[in-house]
Image (cartoon, rainbow, N blue to C red; front, side):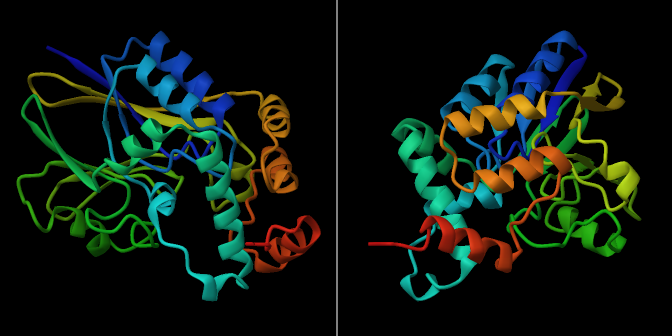
Length: 272
């Protein structure tokens, strides 16, 4: 039997992008989908994103670092940090617009899942198996970093990760394969001419009785203006930043000066 599996990651609240990816997955007749984390924020999607993933038989989910923010405790001594205010405001938006069932479902996602498909053993994790944040697995990093994905279990043949928003496939010194499907909602490249292509990314994995039959890196166009208009209707916080993201792909998550200006302008730093 041939398994045709859609590997999807890093939607980041982008409803319109996921809608188009779901259409493409259906067109390609995938048998199931695996989700690699970071479903929510900074876009306006909440329960509708989970509904879309159910349409393509998403059988497996792993927890991303942005998903984890839903469950982190409140730390009053950090309220003056513009980035903390940014995340807190977006988290409040998700909690106000997402049902308890959806939040509890995300909370149940594990950090790592091991799959056995045909003759292959496959590890799924957003970043490292025990760490869903950080810069460990940027595609230009040393091979030793990626070998950490296999350190606890040498039976793993393929490791699939998300988090870096870049599509890639690379081997380890032991011959294992590391795959990243790229990002649905926030595609990224370190090269300007490549970064100007803002189509959504995902990949399709084909596995048969012999092994890995095909790896198909997909790019899907979506209407970025329509996504911005939807976010505006839904009264998404930091809508100015989302508009810039839809226009240019640039995000401002770590730009504390920009965030502070918007926090002051809109009163996002009020926590009464």
